[in-house]
Image (cartoon, rainbow over all chains, first blue to last red; front, side):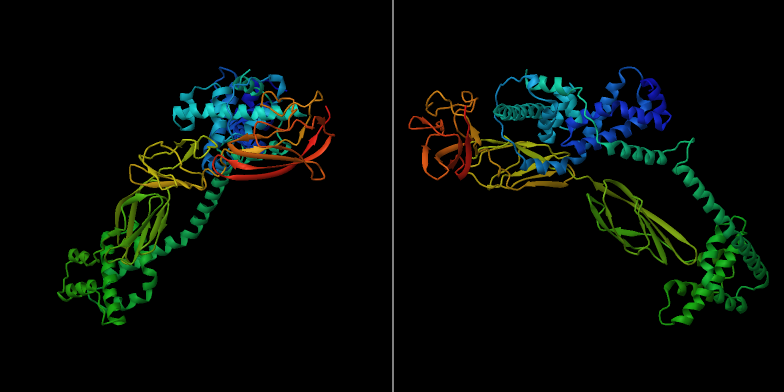
Length: 183
Length: 436
């Protein structure tokens, strides 16, 4: 097994073996990110493939300073945003029909109560616009102003979408919680 | 722990295993992309292209050599005949029509060839024009072209000066009209060729497309400024060129959504959130006969119904786009749902009062609702005997009849009522009573 630096150098030379090693080492980590931005696993895998293509062909852009995983994460997030823009018009009409009810509350959640799979599932069910904003703000830690620029929306839209996304997630988690408790 | 912390802690660095096919498909895509990429160290499309170009070039060289020789011979012949002929000698004119079909191409070639002496070129075109006159006379004496008339007139004046003869070439001029010189995407433009004295034309549309039609139509499907070039040619080997610019403006994009997600109509004020791009003017049609031209209007509907909401937007160039959402509020915020099981407490009748918080252990059979105004619930035994009734949404069934806990098993429920928006509902289902 090569270390990160050797893998990076190998990929820069377009060596197939280094590319495969990079995939084996980081595909699970990156799919974990992509799945948060996607509507389902198939879409997440599409984003993953595109991310790897970008990584392989622009690995020279990685400055070497800062963490390699952080750079990979950034590429995956940007690819997810590109996908979102591509599918936007098409998606939107579906979202109208898939309205979800919002009940606002201030419940607190036990971390150990929900599995990652359940959280992914809840996340995948979000309307895509909410999902983008929630991920970028709550998990990636971007500011609303940055998110507005990335998604081509207004800063206030980002803020309001974030709070609505939170409300929908809270509602879904509560419902899921009730369901789990009833077993 | 709040929602944000929960997701951040659990999902920030969580890993998901991709499907088996993902890796193979990715490697295939990489191979294709690398093939398209220039890289001196491996075989790729540039090598392939290079090989193809080299092959094409060698074929061209081989096939064009005899042509060159032939051309040279012909030039030689022309020069020879020049020395022989006095200007209006009949002999060469009669000979020329035989060769005429192959002539135009040769003219182009010989003029582009720098080694041809100027004199022979002039001489050559004169013969060619004489020939045209003769041809016209032969073919259709009734429709003599103005050009040839002019030539004839000059000929009758017996102009013998070689410099004047140059003017005998036909006056070719390129010009065209367009149906529109600019507009919104996609833009269809009709071109009308107004050129004079030409035999063939070639249009270049500036977006990579071209046409040899006389009056072509073209659709521009990308924004930008396009330089339209028209070249016209005649059989005399002359050409003329003209150009014009067509401006294609982008369309704005109309996009919106409504909030809240599931409004209760008519109670809720509905916010229309505008996500449009490149627009400067907006018009909202709410579907109930009301309109607004605000950027993000609020609107309240008077009664529940199916409304088609349309947003029309205009860009600064006057281009429009619209988005229509049919039955925008069809999934209204009202619902009523029942669980399929409950566990009555064994400590005696509970009375049926419940709240979502108090009934976490599912002791009371009750619905989860929103926007219910009128409500009537009946519970039946399996045999269809009514055993419980409630007209109060806050009172569910505690599992007891007349102070006695019912047997565990399946019971039937039926509910009817109305939602806030006036929509009636009737639902029926079964529920399993479980033993505590």
